[in-house]
Image (tube, rainbow, N blue to C red; front, side):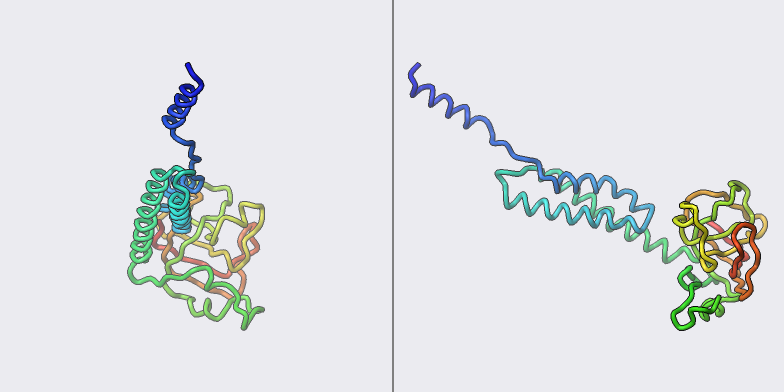
Length: 225
């Protein structure tokens, strides 16, 4: 076989083998984030996941259009974008519906933010807006403070998050509400946010609570979920 024939055969072999293309990292990350974004259906703050995945997917498509000979991964990017859009829109709609319908009739939604000191009166134990809530029927969300009891709980401390107590600290006085569930309501301890409705009592004098120093706020709860 002549050298010219060998050169021709090698050229034909090179033409038959497709050029190597690297997989787009953005496309792969988009698909992974899209798969993880199912958690956004459970927790509103995780809607940032599908939003992030959508950005990664759009970046991946832009790079794939710019470097079609060097990059691959279009299928992964398109699937990831589809998942992220579906979960972003669906999760947003779901949480919006829950927010709009979760407050029982006759109750006013409040949050722990309304129980905190204000710059105008930093030394007041109870801020004016909290004093206005005394005796009102309110709806609030929070977590059961862990005190060792796990089942058949009638009285407990409600806190805004699990961060402080889980790292060995104690919630501030304005981050605690002593809750008493009306008969026959009971609950259990688990790391899940509770929805409660009842009559709020606000007292400028601390009510002693074992191991926690005391509370300013108490809730006579007639609803818990």
